Length: 307
View 1 (cartoon, rainbow, N blue to C red):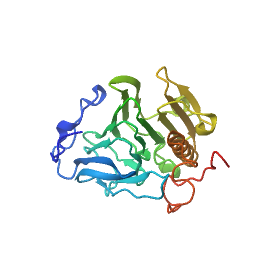
View 2 (cartoon, rainbow, N blue to C red; view 1 turned 60 degrees about the horizontal axis):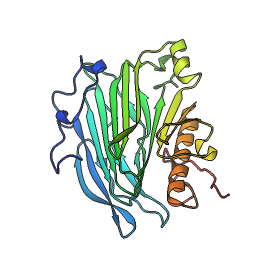
View 3 (cartoon, rainbow, N blue to C red; view 1 turned 30 degrees about the horizontal axis):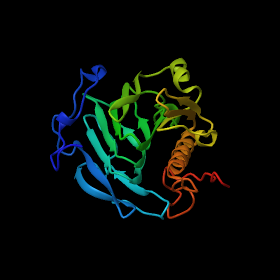
View 4 (tube, rainbow, N blue to C red; view 1 turned 30 degrees about the vertical axis):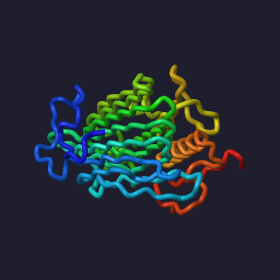
């Protein structure tokens, strides 16, 4: 985690080779920012420790729902999404024994790039005995958008993390104005290290716009795809019809394609079932009532393992 409370600047971000001809915003005010947040275990309840917030990102204090339930932490972006030149850093430290779900409040809209690109960087550290679920939310790339997402996760030997990505084809339900697969360039890099050893690496570089054949190769006939990384092994119920891939390090990755609603329900349900399994909870985290209204993007009902 970075120093406290040092300002987040463009020096905190990296540029992949594919985007080196482009730059982030020259005037960083309100464009380059993020959150540094620490989760601590206070008498068995996960609470927010040290926290630094810099426009445009904000974080809400954790919500609590019951003894077997995790803390729910919202990351908020009060702007319309990621604009050309924007850079957001999310620096999370989950302390020993913490239990939390970190979510974005809604879809991330990646706006058209005019001169540069936009970026999000996630730096996550998970300490011994902690279980952390991160679901940033659906990503909607607009026509002509360019972006880079870099995810770096460092785990203690017995820590657990569940990370989910959900990508949509763009603003596609617009008739003749459809922006289906009309982005310019999307790059994502994700690495997971356990006790300092690299155990998972995933990278893609999507160069658009895609014609029908290219879109079908990546997404099939569907407008959305999702990917979930889970430390440890999974049973069939947690996969929710996705393609399960096991890594040589003993972790799991699940992939789905389908409609936006289908893959969102699949990735959320699988993530929260897997988290409950790792904490020996009787029911999936957060999905059985409590105080969540059905308008949350991740509010999908799934049956209990014991039902």
